[in-house]
Length: 177
Image (cartoon, rainbow, N blue to C red; front, top):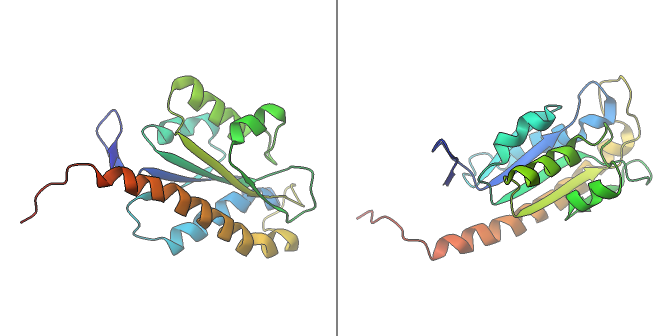
């Protein structure tokens, strides 16, 4: 595990769920993060964080990471339930505001780049929202898209973890015998 500037060890890959549970489909990033936390419990190389609507307050969580997987609602103009994978979300954020709740993810990534804490590899996995208004619970279209979005997220995670493991092969390992 890598360390932050204050020497607190953390996982090399951060899975960051974003969204607001009070705005219907905007909560999809939080739902995806919770599912990954359940399915990958005990995985030391991954830290799953429910970032909610914390925005720039999450900058410290990005520091020292090798990879970042952002899970969020993605308003890309497609039909509700469409699953999106964006391998360069910072470039996508420059083109348009892609979050259902504004550009919180884009602003976070831009600030991370500006402050030098943006991980080398960043991927966003999101689902096109249908209902983003005061409402608790996901729409049918978004709920039905969750399995595919999880599959896409796990594929991105596996790609991220591959390089993390291969980089460690050449590192000196402490003798345990």
